Image (cartoon, rainbow, N blue to C red; front, side, top):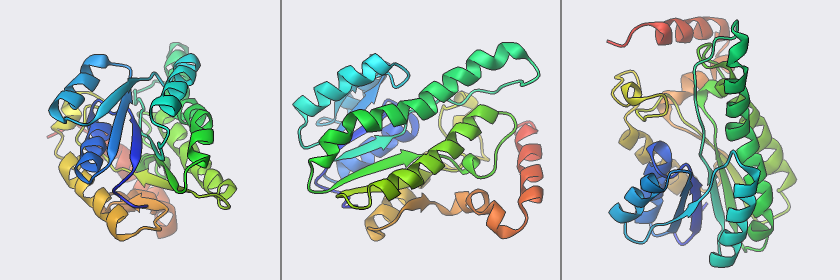
Length: 255
């Protein structure tokens, strides 16, 4: 992937990793469009970064995806990069049947959202001389956290979907890349996560991601060093021990 000269759409671009990627790609010389549900969050990004533009998009709403994709195709005919980043992460108690709506909303946002948006934008991407789809999964796709079972399951599905998407598009000009974050200091699960010393500082994560994309143009998985113990837990031959360690450590109170 060339990290400059693109027209890039980033979902969930109003905060966290999405905003960080938007600002990083903007500084690298790209036309960036941030997408999200909350106009006030998007406005903060565009105000702080003149040149970044925004589009209203709720990835959990099929009609919103259809409307936004038509707007994007018309307003940004050179759109050639899509970063499927929007997602939600909510704790669940699986013994409680009332938690089912939470699981369903996570599946709708984290899995159906990227699938629907990718499908809606495929005609635009296929018209480009070169294009890239970047799907943001998680280290928890490979070593799940019992506190958030459906989140982990959707990210595992995104990993699988990304692999097959890459295979089906191998005879096109579209590259498919998976970004696999570790536990990062964002507000994904609330303000306490942004200050959790166990989490990777967001600027450090973004710097490493951009460096991988810059120096490895044919990369298929962007794995920062901190996520590798999760990503390669099975390959290490110590999956059971790593699973127990993760779930015990993340259940403990933050220091």
